[in-house]
Length: 289
Image 1 (tube, rainbow, N blue to C red):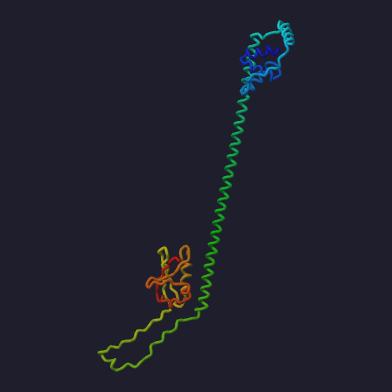
Image 2 (image 1 turned 90 degrees about the vertical axis):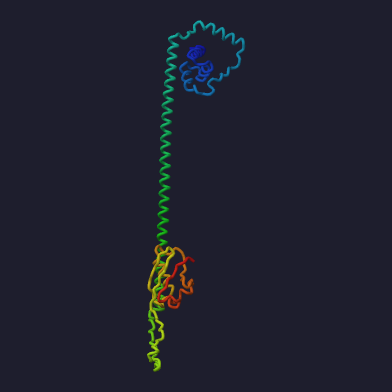
């Protein structure tokens, strides 16, 4: 089948002249089926309707010769019959349907692959989030473990300090005993003092105390109470507060009395309780520094 008949057949099948010419030129004029395959594959090309560039003009003598040759062979050229056109059209429709199915299958596979990629990325993101959460939980656990270790170290330091203070107090006052109270010297009583009109009046005796009871009021309103030796230093009371404070002392504090008001200094911590006027009992207030 000549190029002219192939072009005419494609046009009769419904293709535009530009599309038909471009298909024949692209397939090297291999026939209608090749042109139809090309048209189905390239039907969505943006330049599918652009006009095909024509070749250089043929000289008039050559053109006349070719026209004469065509006229001589036109008589023997066979045109497509209606049956052949119908077969070609049917073939074209089958090709179009096949290409459509192939395209749909290809798009379906691409969608499946995209979905696989999306799920894979989602799983990777989930794994990354899980790793980050595990790392964060591990970090929190490590921080908590460090805090507990620091708390244990702090408590150990307090215990060591208490032990040192106790040892120091034992070294200073361990062998000391309360001085016995000397009875007042007997003095002769005048006879006039024994008369019924003048009853006997004994002079007051100052009592010595070996112990004192201290009540300590904490910042949260709770109170501690403990008995100390009168000769113990005020530092023993402070250590007792640090050791028995519920939850531990959160920050440095002072000890003071309200009546009369007195804030005890670091120098006072080395003084005995009886020297500070806290014997036989006293109430101490804990205040922030």
